[in-house]
View 1 (cartoon, helix red, strand yellow):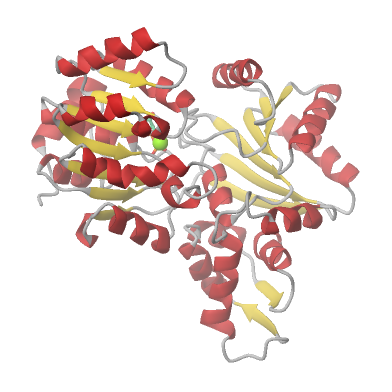
View 2: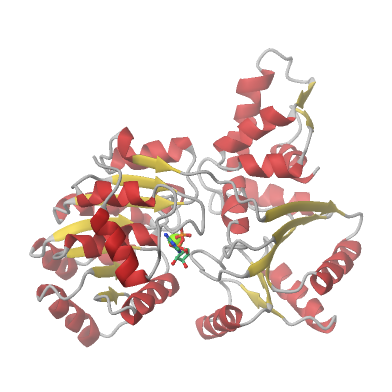
Length: 427
Ligand code: ADP
Ligand code: MG
């Protein structure tokens, strides 16, 4: 397949006003335009949406179906495309029958270049039938790691995506994600029949992100530090907590301390959540949230991502800090640890509903064993030099983190998993 495409450049210029492609974007698009399928593992903010959007216009006719996990994200993109005069539409669970029918009509008339759907829609017979009668140029699976990480517990519908591609005879497939270990990438490309030369990766290096961590003796000290930090580092901020209750409590305390902060978690009603998200998109407030907040949020000027306690997994951490500084300006990613954290994290690690089948922690530990400790007796203490740690973390898509944190890891291999994880990230 060619790696450049003059046609794609023209579209980029005419429809988006951008002057050039970023690393690997053009190669992926050129491949798609020449009939190939691809998997793109690019960091957050790299411009993965543009891959299927430019390709969709390049096909000229027929529809590109974009499968995306979040309605908010779908709405964002459809609005943006419509503003650019591009035929885009969505069908989602919030729509009335009539609205859906109108979209179907537009698809039949070949007026829709990009059709966004949530994975649930793939179970809908009428929808499958419609697409069987339509020329589907491309199926793009956004946040494709969800196919595997959430497949069993959260979003069973994502498992259907690969079958759906065959059912509607899509000409090609593109899976994009920011978070895929080599293992997950391999599973994705196998499931969708993408050969290895169709897998594109770019560096996860984000030089404008400064990675920091602090540990505290008491929760009180930690909170005081947070207030001080927010006062001296202005700008839009997300504070991540593992528990909904912590998100509420911390947001409340911040308000009391004179900082404009709002909680966000899946236990809150939809209207409140939407209002909070809207406010965040438009201003520089602080959101105190669980992992329910942020997937696909495209606010370029988030200045701080703070983990108030440990992140759920290495993948989560990578994804969450990836939301900072997409405008390229200096931004801070800060982990604040207190002694009470380990218990929460223990719980979350063993709770099968909350943990992806192979959590980053497990994988990390296995790596430590396989690459560095295989000859050492299990009770010994091992020391990982910086470069080794970088390699370990690279597999979890996080080489930079290790380099920037400048950690020398020293860990007891028989310590509990969360503790090992803690040592790696927080020393
Ligand atoms: P991702 O899905 O990879 O996290 P997005 O697709 O949301 O990233 O893109 C992030 C931002 O980068 C968007 O505002 C997008 O318009 C912009 N962008 C993408 N590609 C280019 C490019 N080649 N030139 C300039 N801006 C781009
Ligand atoms: Mg995206």
